Amino acid sequence: MIKRILFATKHKKRLYLLPTFLTFANACLGLFSIMQSLEDNYMLAAYFILFAAAMDFCDGRLARALGAQSNLGMELDSLSDAISFVLAPAVLLYSWTVSDFGMLGVAILAVYLCAGLFRLAKFNVTSDQQSQYFMGLPTPVAAFLVTSFVVYQEWLEASRVKFVYHKLWLISLIIFIAFLMVSKIQFPAFKQGGERSKFSLFNIFLILFPVGLLGLIYGYPVFLFMLIWYLGYGMFKTVYPKFYR
Image (cartoon, rainbow, N blue to C red; front, side, top):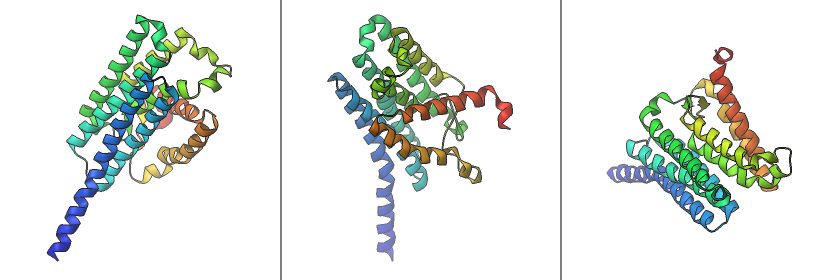
């Protein structure tokens, strides 16, 4: 009986290591993205950021499911996010095209970097207030937006919105994303439990995510449309709260 208890306890401790493993995988994928950006493999660098977001999506939920949440885990998660969703996208943007903008481009990426770090630090000290909605755009979503410029470049340049790749438009979009990260706009957190969540934005996201993957494979900007919907929902909910009583 005692052996069974000890075995179960040891097995449980091993399970607790799984969220930490996913967190470190997130950080390593961010590192791989930076390395690929420096080697001018922009598409691969963007995909590594997307894979890192998948790891980040899973580690927190797994930690909550196992009851393995801790302050150490939260700090590790934020440090990993700083690499994968703040530094890696900035390096990708610089290597991809922003280096052509000179010191202005460097300054814009510095704004993005500082906004992302501020967003992560702010979340660490206010996480208990952000169970249902995030205050400010989450850094993984910001990184998704940045990488979408690279992943969907061919499609966007062939459409009526090819102007987004003009220098002033691209700079404006990067600044706008940085602003959203430090803003007080509320964005769905996809982690609220209970009866209400069965509606739920999270379930809608789970349904649309495979569609987004198929779109990514075949070159259709489904993920980009999902991101635009996410931004629009958050801004609409914040600006017009009377519609969400």
